[in-house]
Length: 302
Image 1: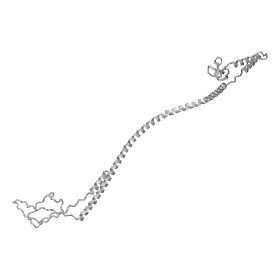
Image 2 (image 1 turned 90 degrees about the vertical axis):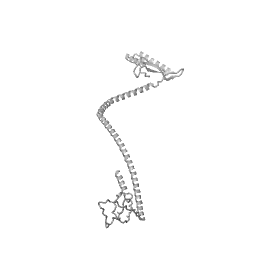
Image 3 (image 1 turned 135 degrees about the vertical axis):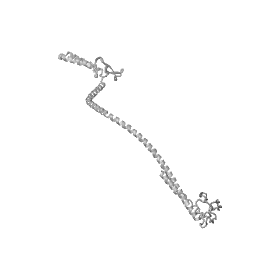
Image 4 (image 1 turned 120 degrees about the vertical axis):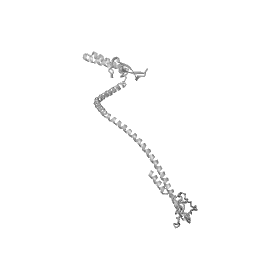
């Protein structure tokens, strides 16, 4: 940035408005006075700043009067003032100078425009540099955050890696337990199959017991009872039957009257006979329901 400003300063120094040379002053021709020339005054007192030609020297042929040593020196009479005559430049020179001046002004204006453009570009570059610096700072902050995050993740990784052996041992223990459980599953599955078969069988039995049984009419019941009594009398009066056969028939007769729960095996007072409201035998003269047995121990109905 400083090199560009130095270059612009050098260009401005090089391109300056040219200084107009001073007009030429012609010294008037003055006859030398008979007295010696006066002392020269300092250059600062002279009105022309840069005379083009020095005043003519007095001729050497004129002898200077010698002053006696005893007599006091008297100042010479004052000389007439020199009026410088300025030479006016010609019109062509003036036009040339004016054209050069316009060219230089145009050049200066162009350089000023270039300088303003360069300054605007420089300002834009400075803004871009500031924005890039801000981005750099934000990226540095993000980088620090990421570094801290990476450090945290590395610590977590180290802790997890330290837990890996323990987890492996746990996995081995679980695999052993799984193998043991698999060995225990096979007998349990066979037992489950057996229990499921028993359950299905009992369900079928329950359904069979729940099915309604046909109620015999009173005449058929009386005929059956009379037939049973006849069979019983004939069996008791028969001489050809043995005592063992009579004993077997007696036990079978008593077993048919004994009520036993098919579910739990309870019998006797544990079995109660109640009405089955779902099975109606007749409606005349009033609704008559069928009977069913209920086990008081397990609640099974049959």
